[in-house]
Image (cartoon, one colour):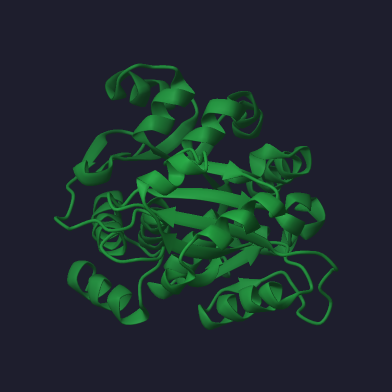
Length: 331
């Protein structure tokens, strides 16, 4: 028996979310719908130009959102990350604790440095655009990983954003190797189309022969496989992953369970903020499959959870919302 359902590795970022207009993005040359790495000066300038009254702040990062979601559904999760010895770093650790997520950091022994921040800009069409200053998490490396947590997890969940640095990529390969050697399964998320577009060969290095479970959206799946349609892309993905999930936004999702394809119907909702939808889907799905549920029922849970999270601002549900969804689908 493994102690944890999922151990995640990824960038520890404090999400600061605002609503903006398309005109704002155009005026400041912000590329809509993608995650872009920026320096602190650029991020600070953007924040000064935005109406801060609409701001919402909480700990985030792709893998962090996923392990928090899993925890809210009742799973046992662990997170390997790096934050600085500053106000936001302590805020991040407090938020993880309140979310029931175990972690690798000692609040009394944090390193000097600036905790990473992600400026999440949400437009009227619910699209999320992110400008990220990584801060100290840009140095995330093997030494930030708790090897024992990896070995004691049913799944090790690897965030695709780590692929942008050599030390991050090395940590991804290390985590995969430790997991495989200890009988833990490996899940990988591409995280963002920009990661696949610019770091496709690096993902090849991390994936190696294959991973146990891959999460991608339609655009990422086609970019990675270099196919122009989803039917061809999903066949090509079989070479990279034993099982995979392709999220399709308002059209639901497609799951490959290693044998057949399962179509997951969407749940009707009015989207106001797409930030965290994929992270929520992954967290709910991983909760399902690590707690005795089928791929199909786990997919339904993930679909309902992600439809709920896009209907409100922020990348996570309230605790009672997670329990209500769970009670409806997996009594």
